[in-house]
Each structure stands twice: as C-alpha cells, then as structure tokens.
Image 1: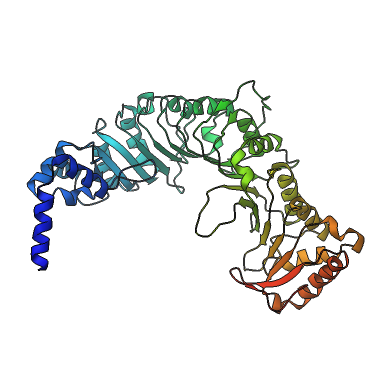
Image 2: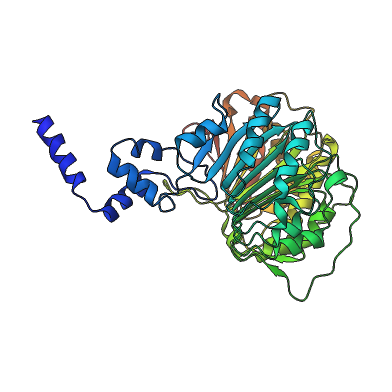
Length: 482
C-alpha cells in the first residue's frame, strides 16, 4: 500500500507544469537574503532527475543558484568543470596559508561571476596578494566580508579603487580591522546596501564623521548599521558640528550599534535621523566630563524607543551597561531595545558616570515598570566601589518602577542605601515601588535586615512593598510579605 501511495505521489509531481515546480523548488531552497549565506540545497534537486536538472539550470536566477566555494581539497577548476556557469560565492575562507590564499586567488579571477566573498582571519601577507585582485569591478557582488587576523594586523589601507569604486548590487558588507578611509566613497554607489558593519582602528583608517554621514546618505535601504572603533585609537578631537538645517535621513534603519569615544558619536548623530529605529546599542569609552546631549536628542527622536518599559543594569570587570527593552508578553518577542554601555575600568567612578549617562539618554516618556540590577556570579568587590548615596542617585532616575530585582552580589549595597533613607524622605526614591525581589534572599541575613527596615519605613508612609525571594526565574511569594 505504501509503495502505491509513493508511486501516486511521484506521478502527481511528475505531471506538474514547470511554473508550479519552480515555485516548489523556490520554497524548498532557502533564498539568499542580506543576513544569510549561499545555500547548497539546490544540488539535491538537480540530482533527482533530468527534467528537474534542466529546469533548475534554465532558471538559475529564479532559484538563486550559486556555487559556494568552501575550504576543501578540490581546486576551483575542478568545481567549475562540474557545474554550469553560475554565480560564485567564496565562503568562509581563513586565509592564513599559501594553499588557501592561492585557491581564493583563483576564485577572485572570476570577478564577473562572484556574488559573495567571505574572508576570515586574513594575514597581512595574504591580503597583500588578494587586494590587487579586488581593484577590478565585481558587478554581481551582493555579500562581502573581510576580516583581518588580529595577531597579524593589516596596516595598508584599502585603496579608493577597491571594487573599481562601485558596488551597486552590494547588500551586506562586514569589515573588521582593515583600514578603509575611502569607505564613504564606495557607499555612495552601494544604494542597495541593507546591512553595514565596520570595526575600525582610527589610527590607520580614520573617517571623519562628516564623510561617514555623506556616505550613509545614499543608503536609503539600510536596515542595520554597526560602527565600532578600537579603544586603542588616538584621542578624537571633537569638531562640535552644529545641528544642520536638514539632517541626513536613514529611512529604513531599524538597528544601530555604535562604539567609540563620546565626541565622535555626538558629531555623527547630530547629522542623522532614523525615524524607524527600534533597537540601539551604544558603547562609549570612558572620558572625563561625559557629554552626550546630541545622543540624548537622537534617542528622543526615535519614537519606537519610547515604548520600552523594563531596564536592566549590569556590571562587569571593564564596563557597565543599561539595557532598556519591552517586557515579553506571552510568547511574543519584541525587538525594541536600547543598550547603553560605558567602557570604564575604574570602580569608584562607575555609578556616577552611569547615572550621568542615563540621566541624559533615558527616553523621557518611557514608563519603566521594572528594574533589574545584576553583577556576575564571581566575586564583585573589584567591579564597583561607590558609596551608598550614589546608588540613590541612580535609583532616582527610575521613579516609575514598580518591581525591583536584585542579584545576590549587588543586593547588600542597594539594600543598605535604601535602609539609610530617613522616614520623611523614604518616598523620594522609587515612589511607586510595589515589589522587591532579591536572589537567594533566604541566605542573606544582613540583606534581609536592611531591606525589611526599608519596608518598615514604607509601611509607615502608607506605601507598603512586597519583599520576595527570586532565583532569576521563579519568585517565592510565600515567605516574605508586607
């Protein structure tokens, strides 16, 4: 019976017209978009029968057929002899040896067919050999990833003639630690770019903020932008660009990641608008006299970021971060997040700088309902060392919070700060607080004493709080109550 059923299905598929089969093929083969890589699943289709093979190779663009050259023992010539003339994707090559570099060299000579290039961990000698081959046009190139080997850094900048100065089909561009000061000139031609990610060492690949904005102005389809500058870059001298009459519009941008000194970031965001922005990650290197007024205005212009209602403060050895996001409702995942980080290794300055940073950048209309404050599980004495009153300064920024969540290692400091509030001022901090959940509260006797004293003061003021034990996932509501 099963054999008859299978035969019936084969006859049915075999009788389908070509256009229907093509739609089925397209559904079966993952399409290449701005985030994915070339798929080899089509190879299974073309081995089923002669008709399927002929149909697939007659309409290769419809199915986005590409030859994905991966590191293997086969030479490029052997691969080209097996398959018809299809676009070539040079995928996931680590160019640290002469053998792999030679294979990539052979593939790059097919510049008129290359649709994707992914070169990881390139040595300086490998790039010296490959760079001249990339000065010619690559008219079909949609994906480009170039990454330097960090132990053998590339110092010679990419020239202005890279890709013959034009990348009209490029959709994804990832550049890591290879200097490219002429990048804005290439971006002016990359009008189909959807995702751009660049990690830059300013000492050898400096790009002025005005030039960067000029390049970005052509990217009307750009959805994701990541600009990260190495901390070893020399001090940036702010130009303090005045707000322009008309900012550069990035109409499709939904994600922005930025890592640099505050001055560069300020000079960049004052020149751009991104009305659809819904997720940001900003990391700033520690500087004396932190000034982020333009970042504040930029965040406030992003209407979708005003919907976030949960804040998470996290401390680690070299940085502090505040992540703002929407509470998850059932199984719905909402991408709206704002993450602010300060790269600061001085424990006695972290709270004050964090409070200053948040005071400038928190979306003013966001009704934060919960605040999580966490440090890693390891010993944290060296992570932060600030007096209690600075904790109060940070907590005052979240005056709409109803639920406070504290990890085991941070709870003693926060509890002590709240305990120190005099009765007549207990409502000045977290005035609408209803719940305090502390990780492993049962085992923290000194913390229980301090937090209960705070709860007593709130009870006397007519605004009681619930105290509970929290393990990061579940809340014990049976043992502590006010």
